[in-house]
Image (cartoon, rainbow, N blue to C red; front, side):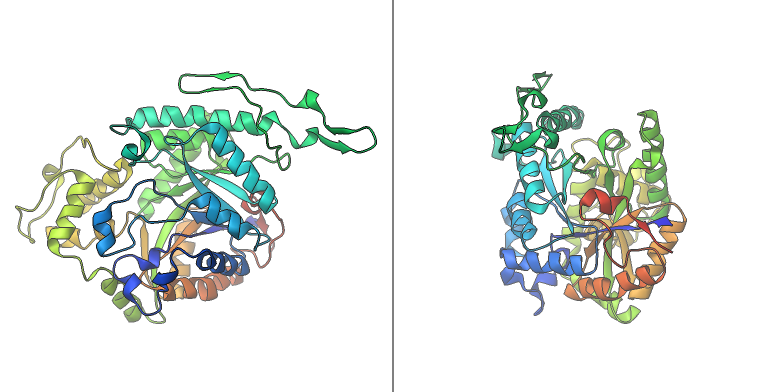
Length: 436
């Protein structure tokens, strides 16, 4: 038996990006309806996916609101609580920030949701890249400080989860004992960033730890993920970068005394699917046709911190055109990815401006038929580039439909994914094997 591919679906409707929301089938009017996300989760559960995943933003750029949904989104905990009651098996992964939250609150909310979902919760740990002005801060802490804070934050949350173990619940009516207080303990945590007394006032759902996810691909992010994460979301635009990331995370995990296979690496796969390759290519082009060169150049400047507007569209962009040390960039992970593309390919400016990493995202992009998508997933899997994928449908809801209705069944047919759930909790899904 082999480990099943791990497949998660984003609950951020990525197919509405660009011009996608303007399509007649977009259901953009339902973007803030709980029913919209419930139906997505139920469809993902019907396909036996491991989990649905709710990204989150704690800031809003109102300039984006004129042309797209931007970073508008419902609160992850509230959304997933509504989904928990209407689903039975699928995992529910919530994004919560260690920069703008408190450990006790996060520990309590996640453990509460774990009870409501009967053990199906996961925590996507983020340090946030924007939002300081919404939390009484003049500027964002440095990346180094954010990760140092995240490490201590995670330690405190884990201590709180352990402070009231499930085994302490005796509920003995005859003796009158509800819980064994000798098994419940304060944590007395005093660290550089947090002083937390404990114990948590919600008992653990069971003896299994809530799975932890993390998405940073910078050096600091990788070190953090290799130390604490059960699964790592990855922005890897090509096979080479995915193989390197997975190997590096395994090496770092081993150095931390962990089993190198303990981390499941899940690249985001941003796919534009059609019944034909021509249809898929048109879907991709239509999604970003509205972007002017000025907007694309502005995107490059946001990502790399460099203005290329003085160059002609036929100019070759090389390492000399971008700073060797990039400072004050919004996302170092995204900046490093685009910088590597420029160094390796030396594209013309026109080619650079059409790159998905500029106009879309830094994720692996697949444009083609469902069979093409399956072939790509298998190729990456055989090269040791992934343990699964995060499904990021693009262009229209058609991409989502084809993924659930054709890509997943093809993976099942090839023995790489489950036909049915064999467990009930997210932790069980993550360690499930496929029967041959």
